[in-house]
Image (cartoon, rainbow, N blue to C red):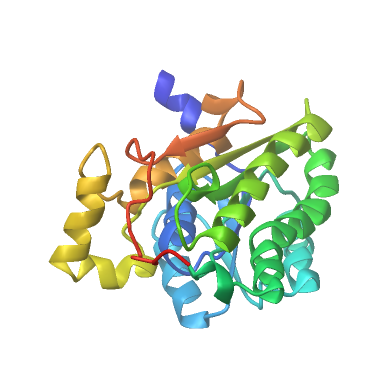
Length: 262
């Protein structure tokens, strides 16, 4: 049965930024497909809710409250997975994000922080996780990037640059880790998470995004996490070094911040 190829029974996944949104959705989706989890974010209450939902599937989630900007804390997630479960099969580098800013307000420090949060944290976790993954044969790394990593719009110089770097990091590291570990990414379009809370409560803003997206809709979290399951499971075993664009066909920014000419 083709659906059997989406099962990852007995495997172990680490997910960063797992308290809400795509991270939380990825945790639940992978648990439904048979995985146990190490989930990490800043907020204990959010993680507790996710862990409860995972438990209802019959799987186990170990929650780690930490500052994911701290590279030592990010790297420690691999040790937690090794201690609690004895293996790592899947890593989902979901944590990231950066506020849009006009160019002259985008300081060098802001740009460096965007790169750190979106790229360096992923590298820190991968460095720690890969040796453990190799002990049990290999696995899959999935980096969550953005449509703004390959399209252009005003205000996105920090965010778009960081996400573009994460996408190309995916391609490069896939070469380093093949054939035992597959490395892919998902370039997500506008998705109904807490990051778009203001948009979702504003008919005008919501309508703008829908109009600017060829499929005239905003993604649900499950639209993105279905891709996570595909890339994590044997269903995606012939993909590495690829960026899966789940963006409703977006080729221009869905939000215009009305930043004027200099």
